[in-house]
Length: 425
Ligand SMILES: [Zn+2]
Image (cartoon, rainbow, N blue to C red):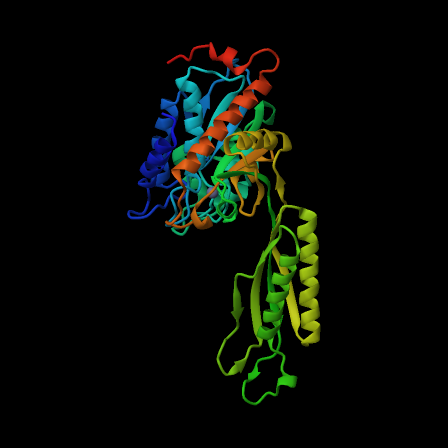
């Protein structure tokens, strides 16, 4: 069955598969993740796919193309969640992709390419604090050292993947061959408020923003709040306040940028003590690496100037840096045309959040379709989407697959012609 209501029903059913009764929690390689793979795998099989689970616990459903040596288009998203999660972040992209395949299966159509729907086993990185374990295995980005990572109970990653027959050699062989791939297309809730504000159901993604995260420490001098005159103070918290506002102002002036100081921790705080030392975090994101890097240079200059003027020392450490990942112009254009046909209005926006597509971009072109979610809320039980929006997303994806099939089959086979080949059931 291929309708938005059916997709929503399946999302409700999958949301009951959880490690923590009463809320939605599925972490990497947990009992709930194994049950989720069985359930979602059964839906894949009902849509004419052959299923397998790889050494990292990724669920993969294969829908053969017209020719046995046809290239493969990958669709999907992740099946793991954060703790006390919403129902849609991840599963919507997988279940929507299965509905697309089902559309062709019901009509006994084969496309000029094979489709593989992937339910990634770990995008959120909750259990081992290492995001993208699933897509890293498929994209060949897995670092063997990560096998020794331990979860909160002291279980290593190497032990956790044993039920999947996982070991280093098996993980290496799980890597997909880039030469066989047409691309990877992921549908995902937006996790932000832009589509809602623009009154649009769906939009295409231009790029997954690059990130710089840093830890900053201002070091002044603690002192008595009653006895130290204002001109003799070296107040680290006042420096931090100035820094936070400078970061905000720079991001406001830079088109498409976001910058956040999310944590601020004075050492030994007390109401009658001048703060002597303050730690802050910084998170800067932009879809263009050059813009992000120049913002970051500007921010370090602010920190230096503020510290000099206030006679403080400062320490600045970059703790995480990822480059932006540009979506494929060709796939995005085709997807955008489908959006235009189904929604009349086309909107392209960057993704501030990371996605499996960022990792898959190492081995093939990627594109993403964002779906409006209520209030932009995600990673929370209040996550919500409209059934009508899911229907538009489904129509867009099916339309996109047909358009891609027309393009791929330009050598002589259109989707209608390939459609005469009956599906073996
Ligand atoms: Zn997600």
